[in-house]
Image (cartoon, rainbow, N blue to C red; front, top):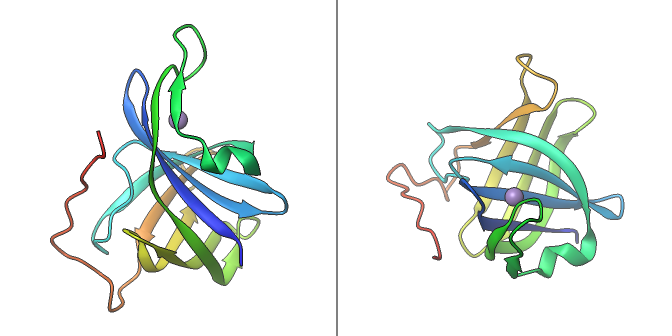
Length: 137
Ligand code: MN
């Protein structure tokens, strides 16, 4: 089964990089506020460049002067499976099996900007309406 990883990235601005293995790469979205288990939250997710699969296990410090300089932690990871849709369709629903992120989510492409998506938790037994994101660092 393919896997996903969420990097907590302490760059100039803290954000979370949500990455899903597909077609031999990690499709990646930068989420300023991070993912949420609350179905009422619509989290802006900016599609960014694909990353190599090996990068999924990266934790460490991106040196000063390099793009994205700062500390990177794995905030969550696990396997996932597609429920329906795809990136190409602009609507991709999947089930995450992480430590923090569990159950069904959907990524929906907005019409605002080409790279602008929303990550939304679907209502299921894992939904948490009091979810508060805790950073690792
Ligand atoms: Mn990043």
